[in-house]
Image (tube, rainbow, N blue to C red; front, side, top):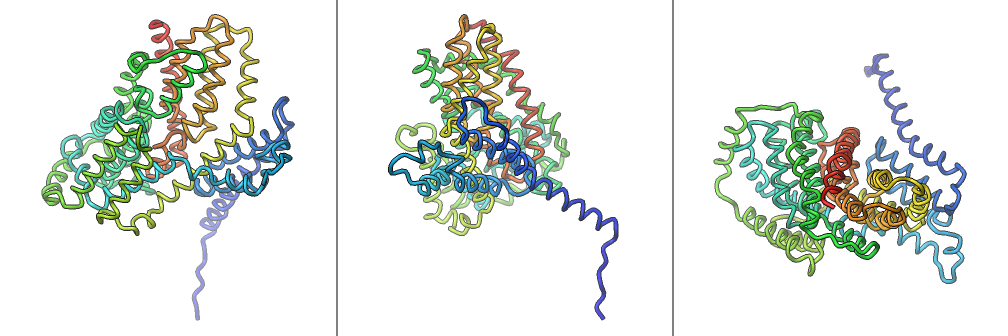
Length: 502
């Protein structure tokens, strides 16, 4: 006679409640998207652009509540838009053009994100992390950090920040710097404290360290002209549109007081707002010293990995004119495979890397569609009309707020710069009395720090989000808090300082 397992009424109620909540979360992105879809189209905006925007907002809602993995949400949005491209992606004029092939064009758009260099650089960063893990080189570096700075979690936070600050002036890709160099090392730190990814123990110390790392990357990306690739693009746009040259030194001095303040206080702010459970541990540094002795001398694969990483850094810093950073990462991955530092199974079996690759690639395509449909152009035009008749100071603040907050719509700082900066510069140039030098500096130096607001806001974001230490709800909450802090610092420290300079 088989015994039947019964579920207690309370447990059954919890299961039912959990299933109901999940169904609501799954339905919410579709409900929001449909509600926007059937709202009357704003005047002057093509219907297909508004309908595209409605689907895009639905995707963002899905990413916030995450009823399914982010890659599934992004892929679903891309597929829906590609299937309905006649009404969502392309204008009637495009569809009616001779030789236009709907199916081919919509598919080309759907997979366009997979050809983005930042997407491949993010993938490369995951493979670097796999190399650090497999060779034990990452563990060795983590043990060294813990031995000398690991007694307090706060000092570890400052060590990570200092490491990014030292690399930033020479590395024009924050994905390469933070995702490809810093992350593979610090990913080995949390397990030393019993802090595991995708586990309640993540909050012991892993969550704090990962948040400090991505925040530091955003600050240093604004601090130095050469610390973020879109910074260089922004300067070219400023020069071509309003004729203003911004030198490396001018940029650095304009952001210096704000940058120094943020660098000095950010690890402490993270310590307050997102505190680690482990604050002081006298035993761990002693244990780390013993573990370092057990590791012994550097192995053959560790030496090879160190050489490869140094080569990658050299290419990222000095050879960007000859080799794309993403191609440099792929070259190093190839070398790791040929020398046995990594095996092909390490590549194919890295679920986190492939998940992030698909997720970010779909978001890049979705964000690009906002520009190609004309939505961003319409937004700039409407913004210019609203600016008429207001004071130069107020206009500067309003445009900075808009430029900063609209980053929620972008999965790439490069796309954000390309789509919005020309519109903002054009609007500002029409306002009598505005200090264009100060305005331009505010715009361009905000590009790095605005990346903190979402888990897709800048290149390294998906890497830290995919680490398993920063759950979606925590990332969005902390992104809002630190995004507000950075924005307030720009307005109340950066703006007065730059106005005094110029």
